[in-house]
Length: 247
Image (cartoon, rainbow, N blue to C red):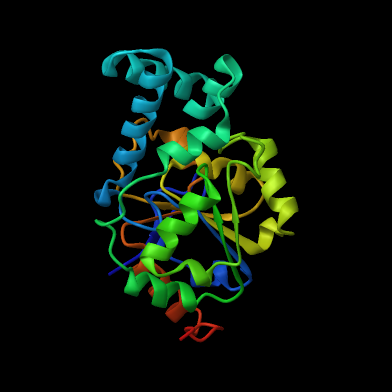
């Protein structure tokens, strides 16, 4: 398989230049629909629980609650931020409720585990969800122990990606040198702050993200369909990994 990359204003894409990654010592991954395939559809459960929470809180029918949920998402970046700003909702209560989902459909990701273990340097999770949710999902995938830290929506002061200040807070909290970091996401616009600061950016495709236009693609350097396969090819191209797989 040929892996393609795109730098800003570089059309058409060209074969993946493995040397771009040889200086990387921090690998930052979004969680939902990035570390597991969007086809798993876990986020549908989260979205539906948001709707049920709003419906119960305000006495709204399902469609009315879903409409409010969507409006707050569009206006504030996350439904939670809208509920906090407009309605004084306790974020801990909300996050605990919406992330109480069934993970039975999520299988251990043995191929991804092997690929992540080969990456030289640190691995971080940066998510608009909670650390509790990240831990549950990553443990179910069998990869949580491979990550050095989680930077969640609470650590971001409830400012969601792609908020610039939240991104800088993540960088400062974990001592990240953007020029030596790569960021993986399933939502194109969330890669913009990373690219602006000099990170290599990777879009993990598969969630049929709407509205991905040329403006979004300007800060997407690489696009991949199978994250585990791509990481294996990347490390092979760089001459092998730096860490052995933990027992």
